[in-house]
Length: 344
Image (cartoon, rainbow, N blue to C red; front, top):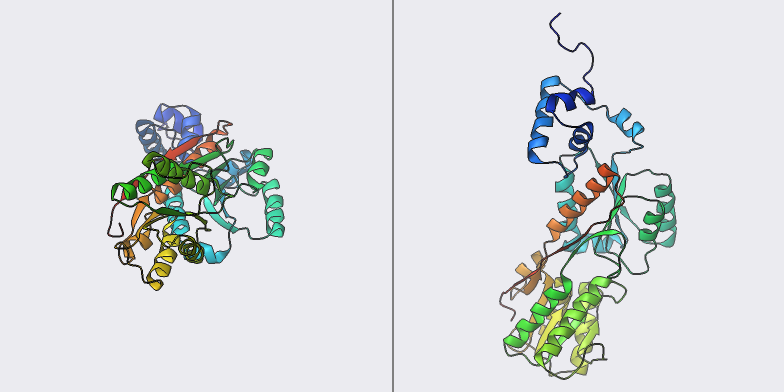
């Protein structure tokens, strides 16, 4: 006998050959990031030497796994395809999952009926985990995910007390830096177009605006009503409506911080129609630093948030929760950066 293994190599044999524990082999196979590069290389070498092939069906059955992740976006398809933010998030998620066995299932939820149907789908454990993008304060899905003990990661959060894992950007700091930059460039009547108030991200960007206004020592205090604040909804049309409202109230505006690039694009159109030049008459800053910012005329100064990296991080955190079956929740906040262009 030559001592070679005559049957199908097992996961335990891979662990012995690699000199690691069975759990480490399992994590490498499942794509968990919680494995050192050295251990990962040893496991991959052992798999190649032994010719080990994971039995996905048996693995899924034994671990009650489906090898599927749901990406849930509770918005109409018109927003999904119109806003670069969503495509950047999806690109990052897809890149992180590319080398795993996970299937990504895109789900749009637009009505209470669709939400209820998806809830039944989750209750049947048809997926291993959920990525939820565009989180609204009253969305019942995060609570349902917790009740089902379903691994989940939110893009953003519902409040500063969020209990579900999330990946967010420094929205307060980014907005504060943008508005402080406008004051530093000599602007004095600085308005803002906000996102919808039922989204924490919108409230954070408004908080950043107010902090910068207070720091500049100009009239108006945080939390007080202001004729320099107009509500938008993160859409281009919302930016147009809000800009018209602001000009009607305060025609002396000399700068606008829009809480998204898309709303900034809508605001710029209204400013142009009103005969105002950007940045000569009114300086303009957006948030996200999407392709829209780079292609506007003039090019838009914007707060860069690492949107694609947010998607990658969301997927990485979710894979870790699934592989580890961990109850520990992770809260990740990525940094932002003001990118200066010609609109200020």
